[in-house]
Amino acid sequence: MQKLFDNIKGDRLIWAIVALLAIFSFLPVYSAASNLAYVKGSSGTFGLLTKHFIHLLLGFGVLFTVHKVPYRYFRGLSAVLIPVVIILLFLTLFQGSASSSGTNTSRWIRIPVVGFTFQPSTFAGVVIMAYVAKYLSRVKGELVSFQSSLLYLWLPVFSVLGLILPANFSTAAIIFSMVCVLVFLGGYPLRYLSVIIGVGILTLVMFILMAKAFPDAMPNRVDTWMSRIESFSDSEVTEADYQIEKAKIAIASGGIQGVGPGKSIQKNFLPQSSSDFIYAIIVEEYGLIGGISLVILYMWLLFRIVIVAQKCDTIFGKLLVLGVGLPIVFQALINMGVAVQLFPVTGQTLPLVSSGGTSIWMTCLALGIILSVSAKREEDKSKEGMEGADNNPLDILAETI
Image (cartoon, rainbow, N blue to C red; front, side):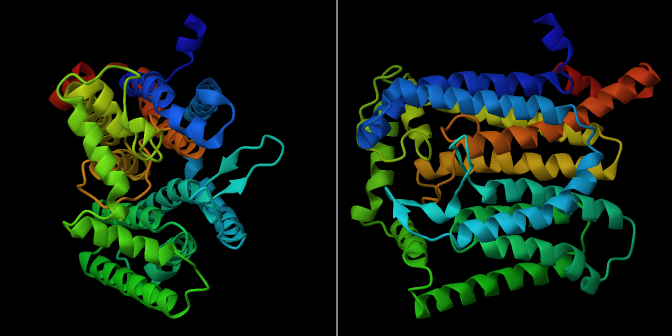
């Protein structure tokens, strides 16, 4: 065991936060899985819990492996993986859009032999953020022309988003938002960025109009988005509000201390209670105390991500950490916001807590990249000795908290 801990590098507090979230996830997933086991009629709650354990085990395997890779390699890998991502997205998009148990199957691709399903759009998010960090670090300090950035930055970004959008609007919107945040932090000219945002909004409007004009091309997807937005903005309770109403009942039932682990009632009525709406089940069972504690953990993770970025010596490292780290916390806030009706229903999972293999694996991939950057900083620090930077008040605070 000691040998294992000796091989763990990078920010130890990030490791601790990730471990806490993963360990805690077993309780709500096991509790909420009863509804899923009843719907599927197979494997039972223990089987679903075992599957969640396997997903986490594989995720931590990804995390451990990636954090050992020097982060400079991700600069070249991001460019190489862009075509791979486009091919995977193309295959999943055109394999069909039929629904199975209310789920859009055109979002997933099945991995041969092992039988697991994989969602390429989540992987695409990590790759595209690393690619944007690579581009921004390359042009840092140079005079960026709009034409060159269209070709080398925005063409790959919009190619990926264009393939994600028809089947998964929320994921495409989150990736685009995070790319805009990253390019802003990377010093991309604001006048260019405002044009890109305008083009993105115009493209979305044109896509919706085309989907309305040719409904057979993408059945149900645009109508689903519109109904969710209308349900969110309309104060009148309808059948479309079933999920969010059950989530609000679960949260209201939790009170301060909750009804207790495994004693949730709404898990039997709330669809996707072990994934999209797991936060509502957590608040019902663990109360306001449990819900706030979870928010604090994600905010703590955000703080450590910013600290790792601040301490990195290279522009690429700083942007890479922020690029793959911010979406994790942003997705968590969206998931929790949906449960309390701050946002329309999006279908985004709670990172490291919700069940679902792809979400866990890609979150661990992103965290592994962050820890790789942190590990490089520790390696350089050990070579240089405890000099200069250790006397910086910000570094002292970062090591203390």
